[in-house]
Image (cartoon, rainbow, N blue to C red):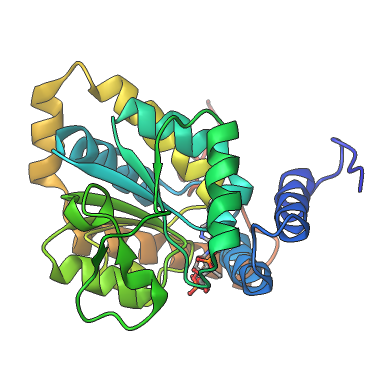
Length: 268
Ligand code: PTJ
């Protein structure tokens, strides 16, 4: 379907189109369309922009990735359909590996997703030949590569389910999630939960990584100062502010809280 650029919901509709195309091509599972709908609902409430607390988490995530010894980005069907180029660019910027890991794993889908990532510029994509299992995880998501997710110290898990996030954290890894649902087990369990839309979060983290690359002191400072509990508190305060705005009607504002307006005195 051709969507005019002037459509007020152009970006959101384009993401849907990408997912539907991915589903037609056998990259996205039908469950992925449902998962996207859940994400959209949260994004709507959050104002469809990156919140200040999400930016803080994204900058911290970039710092942890730049300092990692073996960083890896995990890719599933939705991620491959929505942002293959952004994944590849981000992985190159932080020198991370890319591994395809699917909840609804079939070998055909695995091959298609690897092909999509290669077409987007990836030179080496792991996942087709798993040689390890993530402990205490029953699903096929446990299948992993020693040279990839299994052996990684920092793993980025966009649009993930809670079980694997928990299992990866149990293995002692730093887990960076990207999930619009701040209540999900993934967001609750990840070391650095990024509560933002995937196609905004990836370029943001890439930009932060580019800026930080030449500043080791700032990387160290960010790694020391990031506090998940504080960041999530700020995120929930932002959500509360959004909901209050919605409840109070015409004062509804999109994006970040406005500074209170200065009251002009008569002589001003
Ligand atoms: O490709 P597969 O087989 O690995 O399956 C992928 C899905 C997404 C179906 C699978 O991982 C799944 O079922 O995920 P969940 O448990 O539904 O979790 C997905 C989470 O991602 C939900 O909390 C959504 O709110 C969130 N989400 C969906 N779309 C986006 C998103 N978060 C950020 N950006 C999005 N575009």
